Amino acid sequence: MRLFAAVLPPAPAVGELALAVDRLRSLPAADRLRWTGRESWHFTLAFMGEVEDALLPELHERLGRAARRTHPLALRLHGGGRFGQRALWVGAAGGLEEMRLLAERADAAARRAGIGMEEHRRYQAHLTIARSRDEADLRPYVEGLDTFEGTPWEVAELALVRSNLPVSGVPGEQPRYETVGSWPLGGGTGSSPPERAS
Image (tube, rainbow, N blue to C red; front, side):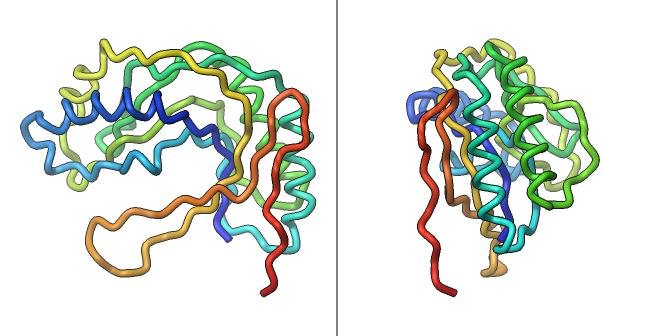
């Protein structure tokens, strides 16, 4: 299954961001962008790609350990940016150093569980809200996010998310995300899904 570790914003933060995104979608040429749905908004900590089922028990154990070693942190959605003309994102403010540490620990947990990870890059917290279909100019949208400031919340858990890629062939169909495990930061037992028969 295709997996990544993530921080999932709570419903109030998602609601605030949805209002900001609705304003962006009223800008000229917004229909040239492929907007992500609010149900898919997340901060990726470590992208693992395809993971064999046999590696899941150790991955769960190691992610649980990474979560226990990390204190809960304060975070808020803040401003925005872009990766070239390809992706538009909302940033974060608050406990960014703790978030980077959690990302590094999630990455290390996956590696130690036997998952071949991409080359390590310095973590940058971002939540993708749109992708360009044809190299659209994203600068007006970034400017539209300049003053966006969400309400702080406490990040209290690390989530393991399964990405279900589109299969219908319908243009514009988005991946579906499903949380398959979560562990509280700073201790506790967390939750893992029951083993499914194949």
